Length: 409
Image (cartoon, rainbow, N blue to C red; front, side, top):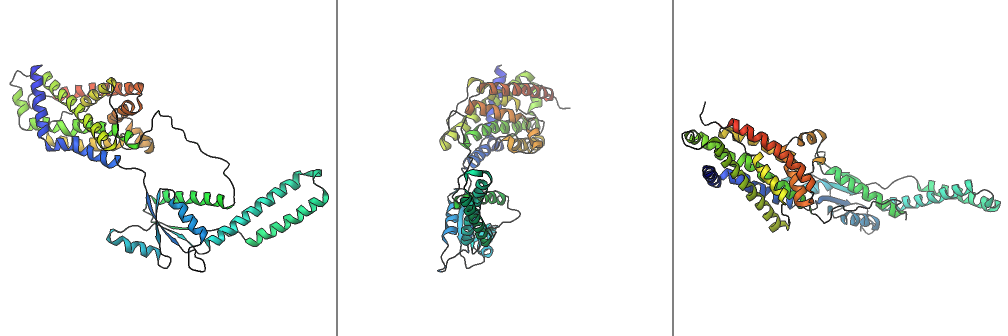
């Protein structure tokens, strides 16, 4: 066992000297945590050009109220465009050389008048519907003279509704086909227009959606992101951190020389596993420390969570034969796994075929296990993830043991 500690000390010191190892194991995941964790509620820029003006050239009251309502969503950042310019060219001119895509909502002339006429027409039609219902089902309870007056009033109201016409107030949204956020903004404007229409006729919503939080404490997006980043720390260290150090030993012929020493292969493997385990704890501590210092996240692993960290560190301990293999492994496995395993966004948000792929990735179970331990405190879910990671660790250790040869072929 003493020789295993010597292997651990040597590989750990070489890892500290490895710029690539330190970058991919610590700096790269920290950058991801800062970038993704700093994202609060997204806001989207929307340019608005109001052409609905009164006789004095001022914005009409209703169109102005609609712009204010859009601004109150806290999702749209409204930037108003002067009414006497070409809206698209104006946006392009202020964008300079950055080529900002135009995203312009035009409120045409006559918008307020159309809204007012539509509101009156809707109220008339509601009154007509009520009278039709009363005439159809009132029966003998309605005196003949009252019925006659109601029928005359109905005819008059119907004529007034026809004279108002069926013209609707129209909004014009100009978006670029390549603008992925354009459809989301369109949905916000559509919902706001519907709400505005309901308020305009004095109606009330018949249904409402009540949301209740089932967790015992208030959680921020970074609370869910942090465990995924911690799992990424462990994964990138196993594949892109310590593995290059071991492969460098092979390239320099140090592993071959070890075959002439009393060091046994099992001691070599145990030494590397110790390195992975210590670094797994170190990197998890770094992730939690950054989360605490920058985002105020307070989370500590439980005993079963600690076991999960150990199992994850061992499972991702890659033993490859040369530096080129490490690079290929990192490009073909580590980075796709990083973005497909639910570390940065929920697996449920991905297409079905990618969800199926995610369920076969080791990082998925490590990230979900750490999330269940650090955030949700669901020990049963942690235990399930731990069993999967332990099984994978046993398989990977077996493969690593077979791949570890003292003598080159």
